[in-house]
Image (cartoon, rainbow, N blue to C red; front, top):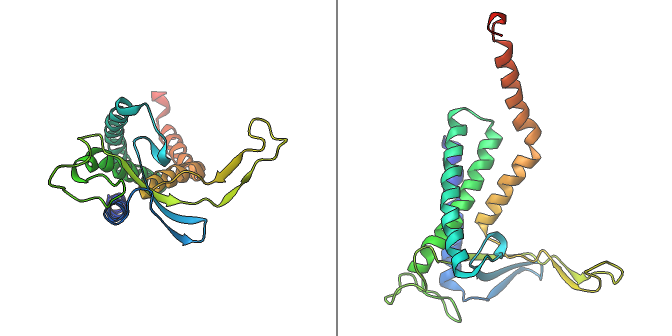
Length: 214
């Protein structure tokens, strides 16, 4: 159990430390160019899902916050189940990353509205005397990583988007989003190894059943 606990701790530590720094040292929309125009620290906040996607206003925000909490409880239960049954270490690592990423964004949406002042045209204050910018479960998720690696226009002959301007990669994201994406990527990339081991265990169990019981 030490490995997944360490993964979760480190992801949450780096995620929340960076978000606290961004909130208290940058105002909304401010940015720093780390590597030219393709790696930028750009402070933005969103009410919705990963990578800045939005969902159905205030009701949608409340729904997503509650859904995240329910989902992370389910993921936590599944992670504990995998550890107890000695699942493949790669699957345990992947689920731990997904759990940590989900937890990171839950902390934002659950508590940030109560503990921070707004970041519009000013640096946010932690625990402001007048209270935070929002209420419980209505906080905004802090994003900062922006990689506009490619910019240009689609060819005119292309259907639908012909001639339109594009940026790749447009979404702004955070460490928690990255943790979730890496976890999902590990499952997809190593699925043959992870699930082959499970099939082998099932086959071995079936082979051990006495003929008289079949």
